[in-house]
Length: 184
Ligand SMILES: [Zn+2]
Ligand SMILES: [Zn+2]
Image 1 (cartoon, rainbow, N blue to C red):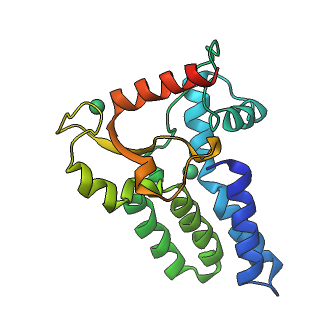
Image 2 (tube, rainbow, N blue to C red; image 1 turned 90 degrees about the vertical axis):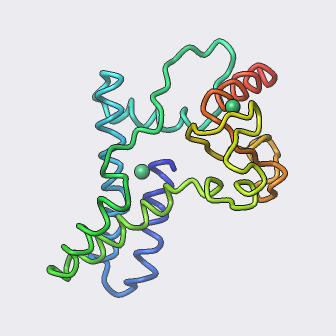
Image 3 (cartoon, rainbow, N blue to C red; image 1 turned 60 degrees about the horizontal axis):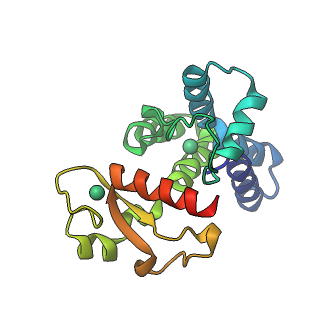
């Protein structure tokens, strides 16, 4: 999810949860974007570009499908162990238990991780249909993820299982590239 959307979602939720405590609302907004430091550091390390403005520009670009002839590099999901809910959340909530003042901040972090979840990956309709095989090449035993066949940004249905498919990473890239060609 984009930095801007994380900030917006956490700020709005903070104001709704703490309408009479602007400091706590602000703390929640801060927590909502704290994990973006993770994305920024990984971006900077991989690209060698340490300007926050460069990172924000990349954040905008990476959510659009690549155009033909666009050779600018892409850096994957940019998530370190801090983005693993099972690593971060127990620690964060333990801290919140000991220091109640931290609670809005931890709520913001929790929200960031929830928003980063790629929900289609947990679509049991697709998983059951595919039976843990890639629905394009039939391979089993590789990590498989759920992809949109026609992306909602291109008018595909966001919720129907018919517009989702379980693919291995190789097939996902091939499909992605052939689509990029078609739309170029
Ligand atoms: Zn994130
Ligand atoms: Zn495959």
